[in-house]
Image (tube, rainbow, N blue to C red; front, side, top):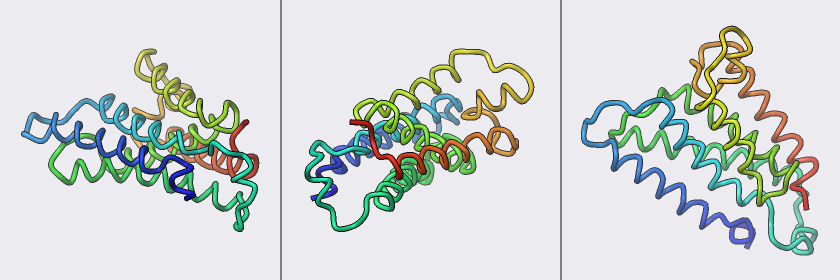
Amino acid sequence: MYARSRRVPTSAAAVTLVALAAWALNHNGAGPMGLGIAVLILTANVTAASVGLGGPDVALERTAAIRWAPRRAAHALLAGAVAGAALLATQAAGAELAPAALVVRDSAGLIGLAALGAVLFGAHFAWTLPIGWLAVTLLVPVPPGIAGEVGGWMIISPATTASATTAWALLATGTVLYAAAGPRR
């Protein structure tokens, strides 16, 4: 019942369709896709998962036997893990998309942004922060230095300290706030 109220079947179907589309477009040895495409696919996966960060019935959520804070944290972390795992599975099936370290870092940062979006704007608009940051990252030239590494963390090498710190800080901040406060109503 929890999975259905959080739209898990719909999110899982969307993530699967995105992964299949990525595989179909790149499985025949066409060479590696651009990093922007890989990050776009990962953002689509996180966006699909973000619709489940809130339930449709407040009264139903108040009747839970397990406290909501650990359940919300687990839900957000699992959604990020599934989003990244879908992209890694696509790569294991033959599509060349992005290095595994980048997928792990970006899925962590993106689900943190989605969780933060759920807290600030509600579950229906949790997608705004990941999509907005992706748009800025892909459309605005990355400035040199630390500001560029922080702002463009999605497409900068995961080996850089600033980009990795930004992603993990977004995960920690978004998950903690989402677990404590829940989605905005």
